[in-house]
Length: 418
Ligand code: EPZ
Image 1: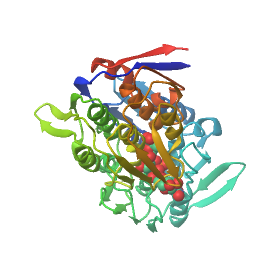
Image 2 (image 1 turned 180 degrees about the vertical axis):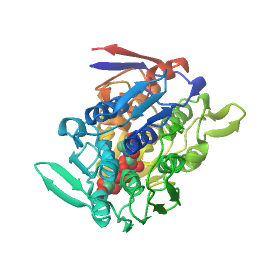
Image 3 (image 1 turned 90 degrees about the horizontal axis):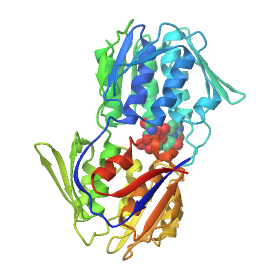
């Protein structure tokens, strides 16, 4: 398994291009199950999660071709066995996104329940509640959920908790349903809007994406399209924090700043300068860093996927920061590793109190989940001495060659085989 080694202390200076959004690609790949024809997706990053989803779609019978770097073509003529097995779903919860399109087009799906994951229980009860409301038969046995429906019917569905993939799954199920489906308390994430835009170009009739109420009118048939994936706001946010905490001066190209309002407010409060320029978004870090309080909530609030990264920055800020994680119940696993670097953090339930210290010291660390691993890399950039992060397969799920991008910005960082 690879490791990443970092010698801390370098400022980040230069330009970096933001890759396509992992969490937009995955639902678009699921949408390709809806049509018999070649769906083309461009600006696709090279990530483990996307490779995992390709394995699942090929297992279902999809043909997948690569049309050059960053371009993927998918055709789904038929799905002889609409089943997503445990060994595929357990590695990536987003596999459940095949449920909606499989039931919608092939009347049946049998998908392994995702089980828990490092950051929380992450049930799919709301996905299943919505499908039931649309007339599907849902049964759970032997760790699998089987969903069948001769023809889904439009329904009014209120989701008790705002769920991103739940909103996406039900949208994918509703596009062929008989009648109109209304999703209430829907997720507003840009990735949901990207999916809705693509589906509308495929012939769907979806209104309200980007608000908490989405109306989907069922249509008879969809046609395949070519869609370009939006930039990854979480990768962009990670590089914004990297520049802000290393007294950097980094120009982010293809940066979706309009998707990062809440993060930008907090980084400016912490002392960073953020300005849009002709070529992108420039982030200039200041010193000392000012401590800020953070509370993660669904979009457009402060993203839970940026909580671990901003915490790394707060560990070397000049005061006390209270970070509250309201979305997932166990998303502080980076805390133990940061404390091994000398961070002063106290966790009480969903709240972490971070007292800034003068400096962190490099240490051997272990990544536990995707965004926690990014947090450890950021901490290593400012720590005194050498930091070694193992189990970076977590990192490769959602960041495209992050060590190469950071090295080009002046970081002393490299990936080694261990
Ligand atoms: C999406 O996960 C993202 N993944 C996550 O990104 C992100 O952290 C999360 O949204 C929140 O923004 C993808 O888009 C592929 P949720 P998702 O359903 O959809 C509860 C990353 O780092 N819930 O919005 O799985 C759930 O337990 C990943 O790239 C139910 O109770 O998250 C959680 O507390 C990590 N029942 C809350 O809702 C359900 O049926 C939000 O979860 C569904 C969800």
